Length: 254
Image (cartoon, rainbow, N blue to C red):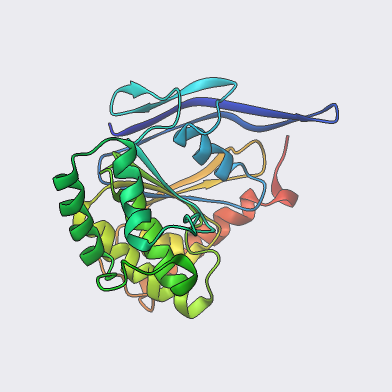
């Protein structure tokens, strides 16, 4: 098993108010699977993602990646933020090289990996540009391959296309899928978009605002590339939309 989320609990205390965001959340992810965490705002999906990343600790429970317990952030987990989080003073090339230098990857290996990543992301010829000189789509591709640079066991993405308009978002979904299919890195992606979840995922886990409880865990059994206009595609969207209704605030129970 590539990733195990085992009985995760997380509570936040603010101004004396106690808010349990996650209660006994557990699931497993097979190697090479693309998983989406889908749910309404406030369901704890981003909190869970950051716990998997090692950015924050759970109150109890554990995260296991390739048989090892997660105690802090590490190069075995790449992370793609919604707002790109590129270093503005670094070129595309230097942004991608940065994590490889952090783990002290040999120079020859870094250069070879950079070449592969630039080709994979269609950024060849733009590696000398700075973030302010490239489009939103190019920024997102840079952020994606930077997260893949160290060949992580698991790639974590927090609404990676959330900042883009509809047309650009659909175009980049195709590019993201193409990049993912080359390496088949295990992916856990947070999204609130049902269509995006069906289009990209092998499996969709729907979380509710009732302490992150999982109300649906659905395998998406469709061939790739997926046809958004097919009857089967629409069936999955409808089923997940119903599951999201169960996850919404007015439907949850304590």
